[in-house]
Image 1 (tube, helix red, strand yellow):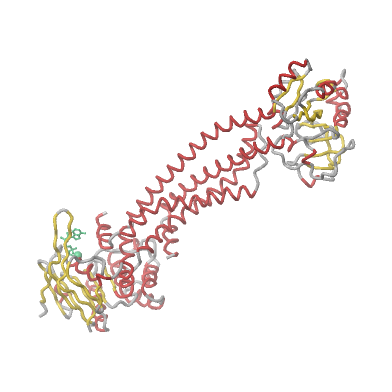
Image 2 (cartoon, rainbow over the protein chains, first blue to last red):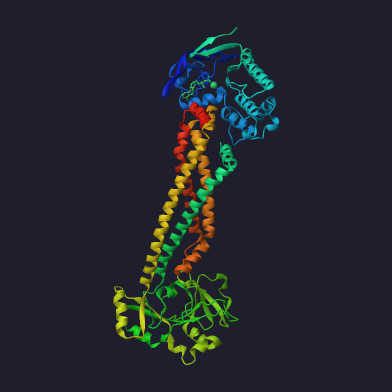
Amino acid sequence: MEICKLEHIHKDYRMGEIVTPLKDISLTVNQGDFIAVEGPSGIGKSTLLYVMGTLLQSDEGTYTYGGKDVSKFSDSEKSEFRAKKIGFLFQDSTMIQALTLRENLIFTQGVGAKKDLKKVDELLYQFGLEDRADFFPHQLSGGQRRRAMAARCLIHEPELILADEPTNDLDEHWSEEIIRILKEQAEKGTAVVMVTHNARWASMATRRLRLEDGILTDITE
Amino acid sequence: MLMLIWNNISRRRAQSVLTIAITTLTILVFVMVMGIFQVVTQGLALSRERLGADAILIPKYASATGSDLLFTALPENIYMDVEVLEQAKQLEGIAAVTPQFYNQTLDLSCCDAGTTRRIVGYDSETDFILTPYLEDAGKQTLEAGELILGSNYDHELTGQNYMLLGKKFTVVNMLQPTGSSMDDIYFMDIDTARQMCLDSYEISRNWQDKDPFEHISVIMVKFAPGTDPDAFVHQVEESGMDCRAVLTGETISSLQNQLEAIMKVMFALWMASLVIAVLALVGRFNALAKERKKEIGLLRAIGLKQGQVFGLIVGETCTMAAIGGILGSGIALLSMDSVIEMLREAFMLSPSVWNSSLALLCGGIGVALAVVLGFAASMAPAWKSAAMDPQSAITQGEVN
Ligand SMILES: Nc1ncnc2c1ncn2[C@@H]1O[C@H](COP(=O)(O)OP(=O)(O)O)[C@@H](O)[C@H]1O
Ligand SMILES: [Mg+2]
């Protein structure tokens, strides 16, 4: 079943000179998809995820989600949409500094879904963070923060997970574990779009796409 | 949301303490100035209204000023012959005159009040000064041994015995607050006050060749409608009487002028402190918004609406401002009593108008002002943050 669809999406950044990370992007994401987007750094992979997550408005083309044109959403409808449907795992570590790890999860859950403390504890355990639950973000290592962000992007059971280089800062064991968890999510019916430039993790996906010159090419073997 | 607001405040302690300190100091100054302003202006207005006398006739040689007589309860041992009273009754433009005889307590005496205070003997037949302020209006004439206390004395003393200059009195009445020296004075019948001069060993030494019953200290004068105060002073000068006239209105006006000048300076400082506070807070809240750009981007990404982000920031700043306001008002009100005491000594003013409802009003305005300040200073940065494009918030956050 289709979750969202990008048709001829074009996005320029105009900051002095014009940069066009997305020239003509078309992509349909279905339930259960585990899509890897590869490409050199600075090419526009993160930009693609921002557009899909409605954090960034494209200049041209249409983006429909569940059959609805997202560009017609008001700002507050977009907020609600993100709260309920989207799970972001950002490339850089972003957490609410004044809240502990557990509180970060509870807060995020509270915005988009019903409070469920059991789910919070389950995820903390799943990502090996149960003994760091009451630490503040600045008291965690880079890898621990990455895992915490991964837990946060699952806490409200989103339909579409947008994971931007999820294995950054992680050791072999936890990289493998995160990819496994994302794959498991896809198998359960969630759609996952993952940005990576690691061919090994990309090969775990069901579809592999390459972003270059603002265009997506299917390179699934 | 509330949890996040509170945690942002309590867990970024150094920052919050700074913001709260700025508001606390601002509100402290604000409430103090407002309180003092209230006390002084109301005190003066009340005094004017309650002095009762338009002029006071005092012995020619006396150096006492109007404010000494009206606003301090210190002893004034000034005396003139009782015949001046008869002459005063003949003056033009008067509606009423009443004599007072001053005595004093001693702080050395074994059986005394412990401080030197003025004792006023008054003539209940002609008095128009304290009679209107008697708490028990039915009790007007005093026997020897009966005493009236000003409003600053303990009200439980009514009906109790009270020792003055080794003599036992019964407190039979008290005065309502007047905002003048009357609040601190002992009142008794004029002849009782005179007799005490003879009965007290220490004081009788001053009266060896004089008879207190032949003397008075001052004469309180009430003008008939239309009397020109300056003409009255002139009339007294010309009359050859052994006294001079002090106008009470002038006393209050000159006090008022002094105070107004000081108030103007305070008001300027007060405005300056408000402006500084606003600038400091705007700077702080701008920094706060900038610092958290990335975090705000995250909040938007997990689905907070613009209004919620705005509410979060403004809620945080207003809460800190309110805490500062409560602290500032609290400290101001707690120290108000000693400030008033200082003022009263410096200006010979007895502002008994400071009371708990005025304090509550000043404190309430202080807290409200703090919140308004916090809101005003954070509105622009909060709105800017809330309206930021979420993607640039997250990515620019990385740069900054
Ligand atoms: N807010 C922005 N303004 C201007 N240029 C930007 C902005 N964000 C990203 N870019 C540029 O767009 C290009 C793509 O960026 P990005 O999507 O982050 O690449 P990737 O994730 O593939 O490394 C880069 O060249 C970057 O410099
Ligand atoms: Mg990127």
